[in-house]
Length: 342
Image (cartoon, rainbow, N blue to C red; front, side, top):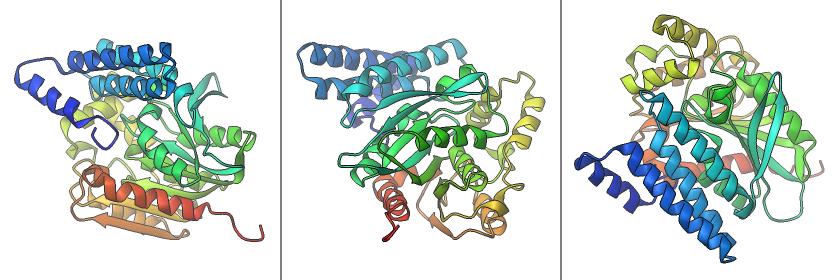
């Protein structure tokens, strides 16, 4: 939460509220409303930079109100809808602005935000994929790191995530969604379609590797947390396990588990990965074990792969955010740098 931008005083107040039997969801939605009021007032006063920052804080607070709130679907989904609306209101006031894009895909659409760095284009672009609970609205802080390094960003929700959860649940074939996003980027103003990379966090790391293995237009890949398959499903923390089941939309738990195992497995495509790939993993990750790193090392045989295991790191090394996040952004910027004479 802190690494993604929740102010420490808000986080400390939330812990204090829990100690006094306050409801987590209600607490964060109250915080969200306060930031929304600040943002609206700032816009009305002509202070749009502040408006963008406060409205984004409102969206992030609503996000963490419903985060892992699978036991209460009605409030969870209300929090999702609030987050989406608040981020959408913040987007035009961001610097640089976030351009809302809805990409047609089969019988639905892929909701996304495109941000371009300052300067003369065309710019390389990194496609950002969230995980089980990470959505496009949560990537703002990492987007800022990429933008400062001259990278455009395209963050989107896929099946089972954020807005798209309401139209498409988690299942196989995520790479087709990523390829539709790349299709859009090929025609987007100010984007160098020859320099597109992909980065995924947590379960999104699985999606990023799968997408890069299946679409050669992706020139570089970052797996922010190793995820090869769901062989760790039964030893995950219970709330994480519940989350995986929830986003399948399948009520029968055993059917959901089998669906998950069939849907999340890189064995059929790992050998097709060709682009440079960076894998970050924490030694103390309680969701994806070090066995996931070993599986990637064993099966990714045709791509240059750089595996970094942080001995002090937790899941996705979120406890080491100020160290590991700039390194990932630097690596991606280097991989997508303009080739002399190209």
